[in-house]
Amino acid sequence: MVHHRAGWLNPVFEGLSYAGRLGLVWIVIALVLCLAYRRWGVFALTVVAIVAADLSASGLKSLIDRPRPPLRYAEPKTLVPLPHDASFPSGHAATSFAAATMLSFAFPRFAPFLYVLAAAVAFSRVYVGVHYPGDVLAGAALGAAVGAAWVLALRAPRRSGASPPRSGAGPPAG
Image (cartoon, rainbow, N blue to C red; front, side):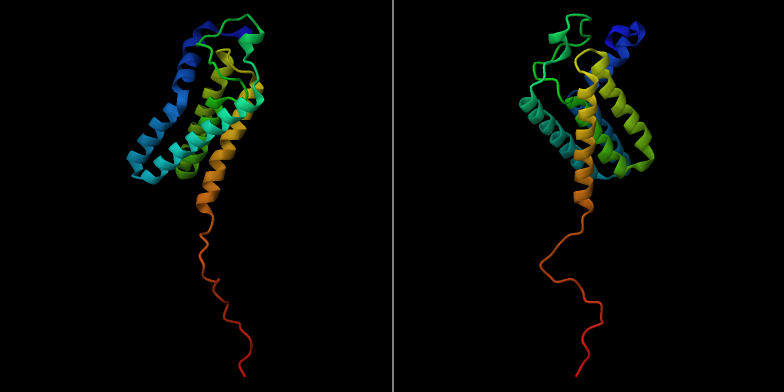
């Protein structure tokens, strides 16, 4: 895939790769949406999901320790500086899909745009030559799982010490 780059697209994918660093583009998008709709809890939870996805990806990178493509293949050269950590899974993909998932649940009308952007950021890492496609797919799955887990945790019914309400059909009196 990297051997078939279209030179005119290089700046586009380099820009997407840089924008996805540390989930920064997602923090900006979350900030804009939360400003517009006055939903500050969503902003905080999106940042938490980004951090959780990044920490999860970093932990897996330490465990799996897969070398990046340029360490195995000398050509073609990367379009961005080679990161110093392992390749699997992609942190950019993980943070992008975690944020896209969180923001899509809060702002469903923007879901198509959010997921297309997440996929573009993820693909950019393959295009610029610093990830294998499998790294990106695993990062996307990890990020979507992290985002969905946060959404499900927030939607779970709150449990209290009180017993559940009775239906009214109790034992007969007498």
